[in-house]
Amino acid sequence: MGMGQQDLSSHYALLLGLNDDWKVEEVALDMENKKVRIRVGFCGRSLVCPCCGHSTSRADFAPERTWRHLDTMQFETELRARVPRADCGDCGVKTCEVPWAGKQSPFTWFFEAFAVQVLESAANVKAAAKVLGIGWDAAHRIMDRAVARGLAKRDVSKIRRTGIDEKSFLRGQDYVSTLCDLDGMRVIEVVRGRTEEDARRLFQALPREVRGEIEAVAMDMWPAFINAAGELLPGADIVFDRFHVSKHMGEAVDAVRRGEHKMLAKAGDSRLKGSRYFWLRREEGIAPEKREAFEALRDSDLRTARAWAIKELLREFWECRNEAFAETHFERWYGWAIRSRLAPVKKVARMLKRHLDGLLSYFRHWITNAATEGFNSRIQAIKAAARGFRNFEHYRIRILFFCGRLALRPDPTH
Ligand SMILES: [Zn+2]
Image (cartoon, rainbow, N blue to C red):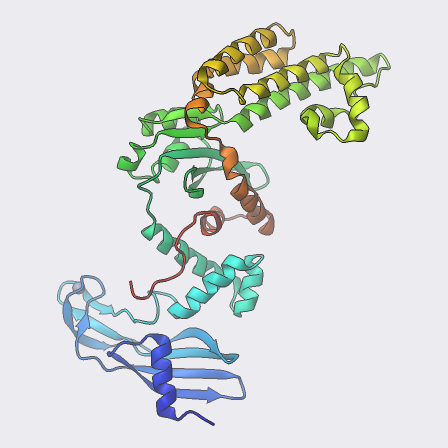
């Protein structure tokens, strides 16, 4: 039961979404190479200049081009056509657009839409490229175009709460900074570096009128970010991120432990040996069989135990019901920390005191960059999948592709 050539032609015309200006002239099956070649011809009478949209006359036809289409019953399917060139009085001779593919794409819209779907669900770009039967570069260009389409259609007007954060890039020798929409849970932009100028570029990814509406921005106590936000987000409260605060405090505890362990070891006391992990965790996180050993250390008169207790008390700051309680709690905590005679702890205490406003503003906005943990792990995976990532732009495209919540699929009717 075969389809006649006529049926086959109209079948493909429908599948390709051709308009009246184009008709399928030939469908050739190459059984040996398992290929279907579809030749499409222009039969329209009027042309539109692709630059200015005015009706123009035809100059000539561009040389024949090929587009890869979705496979037909496992036959690799390609489309061939000579595209007319418009002779525009204002713009000159320009190659017209075609209804089945985007500008400069060697794939039809349908193929490109399918490819985006495969890329979204495949484990990595290499695996997706293999499924699609295309090269890595072609797959990357599909992502590139998908992100460009998504960015062009993206609505950022409702963003009120944001987060700015830095991540290492190229094995930690270098940094990138990301801006997130904490309400929409998406990455807005990625820039290279973490200087004030880099942060400024990052915020400028949002139009000025949107920036004026931003109410809060979560970040680490990092002067470059603080200054850039002060300048470009005039109405935003800075909220210092609780997880960065814990990180600083954890590092202080670790510094105390290292110093004390060195001292004790000289006197033959190895109590702190191998205990690093204990002190970094919260008490509930310690395995039951190790509890007893930990409790003995915790209740000792070790300096490290004192530093740990101060860290734990700081943790309770974040559980306060409101700003007033939090402020009282902080003052009590600060008094203890500053009299602790533990230099690393005192240093963090002073830093927190200096940034108290931004710590207390948490109780007005309740935001933290930890909400972005989900795509932080995704970004980690992206980085791991492309070890080395020499090319920042590729890295950026992938982060936006996977974490930008963009409308990535092409919409040929648009
Ligand atoms: Zn024109």
